[in-house]
Image 1: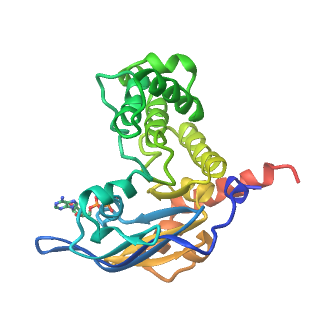
Image 2 (image 1 turned 90 degrees about the vertical axis):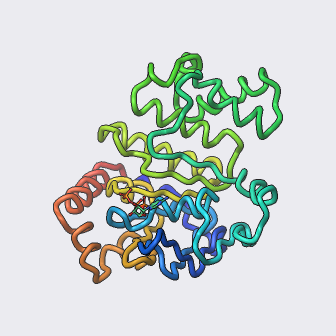
Length: 273
Ligand SMILES: Nc1ncnc2c1ncn2[C@@H]1O[C@H](COP(=O)(O)OP(=O)(O)OP(=O)(O)O)[C@@H](O)[C@H]1O
């Protein structure tokens, strides 16, 4: 059984519905009438060539970028129509892991994770510290990591700490922007597995922007491909890989694609029946 087969299949109710999304920067059109659904409980991998607007899509959904046009319905509410304070109540149900982790370099890991708990959940310093240590343990970090500064950690540990911070406020939807970028293959595989385990254990829905084919094979229930300013296809890996599109064919069936499929097949063969 592969890691992804451990994961439950998506339910039928979309938790996020993006409709007619348009994003332009001056004369540069990024998204034009883009539609996308994210289903409760699924891990959706979002891929596409460089500059196709994967990060802009993520930032539009989580409220860090105001789209040029379109609707973003989350939990059945159109976030683009809400005022700032109403919107931020919904946004607290999101956890976001940015590229590079974005931890405060002058704070220990425990302080980094305590911060949102003190600011948004109104916890005392000691309550927040206790919960922060629990979140760090959840992401597989040893207890002594709590008092370390980000600069004292390996890249993989920084990612785990940033994930712990994204999970601080018990989000329902986790957004990950290139979570395995910069990790070695072993660290990346361990991080993929952690995402699947946490998604299952915590009932998280995951929106995962990646270039990493191994991540798609190991973690994702569905894959959405951004191309020609839209979501060209959003389906299971097997279906997407068969789509008649130049970029998709090169991506899935080029040398790296073939290597990822071969690695996945070897994993499947090694598993006990
Ligand atoms: N605030 C901004 N102002 C102007 N242009 C922007 C802004 N944000 C993004 N862009 C442009 O929008 C395009 C899409 O950017 P985005 O970062 O979403 O691409 P991506 O698909 O995530 O790319 P990559 O895979 O390289 O990370 C790029 O051409 C980028 O330069």
